[in-house]
Image (cartoon, rainbow, N blue to C red; front, side, top):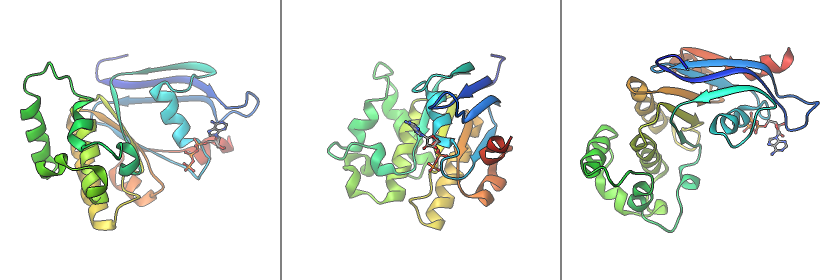
Length: 203
Ligand SMILES: Nc1ncnc2c1ncn2[C@@H]1O[C@H](COP(=O)(O)OP(=O)(O)OP(=O)(O)O)[C@@H](O)[C@H]1O
């Protein structure tokens, strides 16, 4: 991949059933600093694309090249194990050989306006917005080149949703973002480009 390119999909064919392709000769290139939204009706293949990029599904044809990824999901409660404190689940993804990880957590908490005491709690002790900030914190500590973000605000009320989205967009200085959303006005507001999977399927 070229410098600054974090994702390149070339001539992708994929379908769960061979003669019913969801992706046919699909191409996508994403560079650091870019945000592309994936829109499309239910069942159009949005989550399938993330599974392909994450390597959980294999293309029938074509290539996917990708740098370091981390993901932020729709429902923050399903992103964390209910029985363990947030901090334990954050340390799981950290390189503990990095002696500055405490300082890094402090800096990122400040950036996300996240009280450090929240990290000592278990998921159900936090509100949806607070826990979504924790899942953003965990994703950022993994220092991704590409953030896969799946409907990050659908479980949140409007004001908190806007704040969470702004925090995610701030990360574009360091990475690229691929965003799944049903919200066309959000996609129009924040994206460099919008890929409408309904239109791809019509071809
Ligand atoms: N494991 C699977 N096996 C077979 N078919 C599947 C599988 N997972 C998804 N599909 C089918 O593939 C198509 C795309 O599904 P996908 O979950 O990617 O859509 P989506 O756009 O993310 O939908 P939603 O907005 O409802 O989350 C759908 O028709 C779905 O039924």
